Length: 338
Ligand code: AQP
Image (cartoon, rainbow, N blue to C red):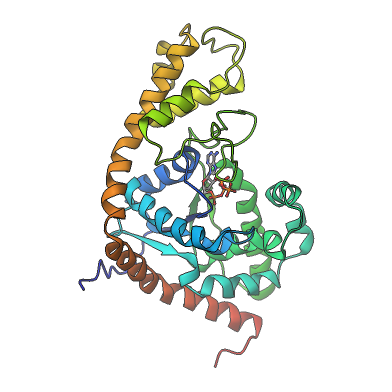
C-alpha cells in the first residue's frame, strides 16, 4: 500500500497538543483546541495526539474506548488537520510517552501534583481514584517535552498543567543540565473556555452526561438547533452587552468563535436582539461551521484503512525524535542505555 507521507522534520518551531478520546468531541474541544491547531499547522511542525493513555486515568469501557480513538483521529482530519504536514499520533503507539512519564514522575514533587485543580475536581467525582489520575499532568509534560515543543495550543482549563510542565522542565534542567525546551501556552483569543449550555457556570465537558450540556461535533443540525434553543440564558428578554449573564455571554462567544466576527461586528449586531432570535442566529452559525467537518468525517470514517495508515505513518515519523529524547534523559539521569 502507498504510504501517506514520509515527511522529514524540519527546523520549524514545534507544536504539540492532544485530546482525550473520552467521549464525543464537542464544540469546546473544537474552538479551544482543534480550530487553532488547523491554523497553526502551516507555521509549525505539529504533532497532534489522541491521548488514550490519559483517557484511562479514569475507567473507560474498552470496546467504547477503541471506537472513540478512531473516531477522534477521524475528527482531527475532518476538522482540517492535514496528515501531509502534521503528525496525527495515537499516544500509546509511541512507547516513549509512557517511558518519559516514568522518568519525569521520579523527578516531580508530589505536592506539585496534589495542587492541580483538575485532579481535585476529577478526584471529587470518583468513588475511588487510581494513581494515574494524579500522574495525569506528568504524562502531559512528557508528551510535550518528548518532542521539545515550543508551543502548546490548549483551552484555558489546561493552563495550570502547562505551568507545571514548565516547572518540571526547569527543575530537571537545573538538576541534570539543559535538556528540555520551555513550552509556551497558546490560548485562542475567543473560545478558550466554552461553557455548558445547560449550566454556563461549568465548562463544557465530554464526560458531563446531560443531553443539553454539550454540542457534539457530530450532532445533526436538528439536534444542534434543539440544544441551542434550550440553552440557559438569564431573566432579561433581550441582549444587553452591559448587563448579561454567563449563558448569554457563552452564546455570543460561540457565535463569534464560529463566525470570526470582530468585536465591532458583534457590538453592531446583537444589542437588543431577543433571546429567541439570538439562539436561532447562534444555532445557524454552529450548523454552518460544523457542516463541512461532518461531511469530511463521513468520508474518512468510510475508509478505515486510510486512517490506520495515517496513524501508522505518523507514529513511524515521530518515534525517532521521541526515542532520542528518552535516551538523552536516561543518560542525564544515569540510567543504563548501552
Ligand atoms: N469547554 C472548553 N472550552 C474550550 N476548550 C476546551 N477544551 C476542553 N474543554 C473545553 C480543550 O480541548 C482540549 C482537549 O481536552 P481533553 O479532551 O484533553 O480534556 P479536557 O480538557 O478535560 O476536555 P473535556 O472535554 O472536559 O474532557 P473530559 O470530560 O474527558 O475531561 C484541551 O486543549 C482543552 O483545553
